Amino acid sequence: MNEVKSTQPCLEVLILLFCVVFIAIPAHAQTQLPSGVPAQPRSFYISMDYAGFEDLTDTTFDYLEIYYSYNRRELEFLPEEPGTVVAKILMQLNIKDEQGNVVENRLWTTSSQVGSAEEAKSVDFMIIDVIGIKLKPGGYLIALQARDANSMANGEAILKAKARDFSESRLEMSDLELAYNITDDTTNGRFSKAEKKILPNPSRIFTHERSMLYFYGELYNLAFDPQAKPDYTLDFSVLDTTGKKLKEYGEQTHTKLGNSAVIISGINIGPFSGGEYLLQVEASDQQTRQKVSSTKKFVIFREKTADELLGEAIKQFKQDVIYIATPGELSIFDQLNNVGKKNYIDEFWRKRDPSPGTPENEFKTEHYQRIAYTNAHFSRNSSSDDGWNTDMGRIYIRYGESSEIERHPSTRGEKPWEKWNYNDIQGGVYFIFLDEDGYGVYRLVHSTMTGEVHDSQWEERLKNTESNEE
Image (tube, rainbow, N blue to C red; front, side):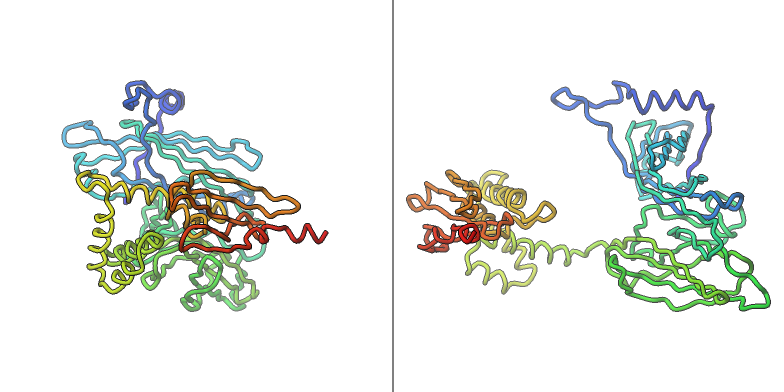
């Protein structure tokens, strides 16, 4: 992790540079696809976060700190002088208010210098920076764009932000700034606050490799009277995304030094599994009994072990072949250990390969295409991938596409239903699917296929009894 070096060239030159780079990419900087169509410029990922604090010079404003980061490995480094290579990044920050008015538009350049291109690509190295800006209370849309001047690769991050109003006299707490690390620092650098260097984590992603999550915040409008109770308390908790408390870290008592205070601490995230969480900080003024709290979402990323990945693959395989594997095959599979199951999976597909001498297993390819089709067309809603687990999905995966489909929409006399005809199976068979509840989920109620559901009275089930009662 590293700070970036910023330079501020002449405004007219910088504006011209952005016009050239962001709007009119030179033809020689574009790659060509085999068809002759220019490829889109390569992109790289930018993380961005923010925290709002009281502006000490004017409390009617919110002092917003915007943090961003990107991986050095995604930049292109070119020689600039003997023994060094340099990447140059062109940056643009655009902020709009809720009415769509541009309230801030900044342009600047940054650079990163290392000894060699190999060194730059050899390790994950996050370049981190912070931008401070004063904003009136309200909602904003923040867009940050970046362009690698050497490779023409693009990066963009967009977020919604809320500038807070800290002008009231009640107890207030700033937003929380999540950090990789907090260390002593009296240099007054770009990451310095309260004689500490707060190295922000704009991604809000933490790993068990770095088991501490650090954070910074500020308290305002504490009642400061040396003759009264001079204490305030802090409580730190981790919640799940529904707001349920998972762990409390106990109450800390602090002595007031004035009407404001800083919150600098960290929690051990080692006991938590991977996933999304909320950090909650609650403060209480012991004199006024006023309380205030602030929360911030964070993510714990834990790389899965080889055994865990194999376990997931085994579980997924059983789901994928549930309609085409025989009961005997599944029984044998369940009795094997994980290594045996892995070998069995390979053998399962190998013996179904219609052309073993070719690189592609056409049967396996067709099978997974059918699963993808069912999830796209038969899932219960647009946000789920459970089409494979419906009656229509099961029939499609097992028997493939039908010869023809008869679709019968809902009428006053009948519920919606479909008839799938398969002319090449058992001399010709069909399947009847009925939407009994009217929610678009069709169930198999009858088939002439051996071994499938058979109901000689299926036509009676089509009747819309509610309409007949009317």
